[in-house]
Length: 384
Ligand SMILES: [Zn+2]
Image (tube, rainbow, N blue to C red; front, side):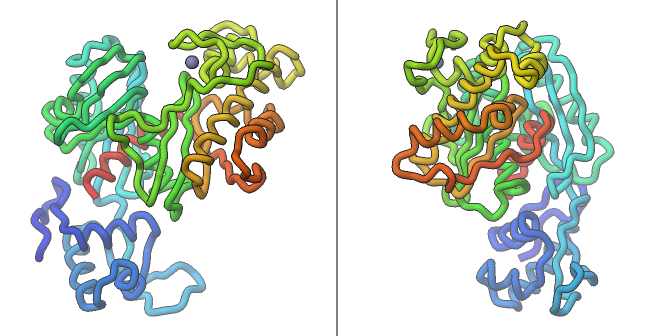
């Protein structure tokens, strides 16, 4: 079978075996045809034919050079051609749009940040189409667009729909279809932390792991799960909700959450909660960090409570999923370095017969563009 689209303007239609080979090289890097044939479960003759088809489509190339020190015949190595396709990723907040373009290796090659202006669905879709259109115009093979946002994204029939987004005030918005219609490209939508989870699984700290728990901490708290090598999307678009577990009674009261609690994880772990509990003005998170580092007792207490709250949610997920790794990401993860002993206390208190020191918790590199990159990877995951 040959690959349908041989031009450089759109993503080619790949059949299952072609996809599996491409995915191997995409996630695990250049490999010899012998290794690939074994991993994908194909004869060497079939693999040779598939490799040729992927080379013809421009997505991979047969390299002469193998990484230093390795044995084997270098001519058989199959490399990804990252520059052969491009993906746009957009992260929406309540007031801004962050857009990136990545190549096929999920490397960000362009980024932009714009104020939303309006939260009206039509206006936001127009802005997404304009910005991604400009950014992809000069790029080889614009393949697909992904959008992510805080909120619930559920499958209705064949369609991914934004069920609810508190920051945007959206309800039941068929964003996938609207973006696809406005851009003419295959499109997808994700919850932002689930988008981040998919990107870490394929291209970040989760590569090679079949189970992960990922937290995104910032204006809110979200989590993503990878189980058996796939991102859990839930039956109703609501997996990984963790924010309203209650803190032990001896903790002070915190910021009142959207559900009216003053003693839940949300009351302590989010950036607005930390600002409030530390006694700094809203939007001055950096001052809370400075005060805690300078030994200010109230600020330190805010970060200790945040660390304890994080420990509770990590313990719940570890007990539920038993993951290989826990990744804590986002712009509000400073409780991990400011109050590590509180995090350990919470894990020790809440884990069921698990040694907290055996729980592998990592803090991968993060900046805010990781969410938009996650959306681009979501678009890639849907195609592959
Ligand atoms: Zn709550």
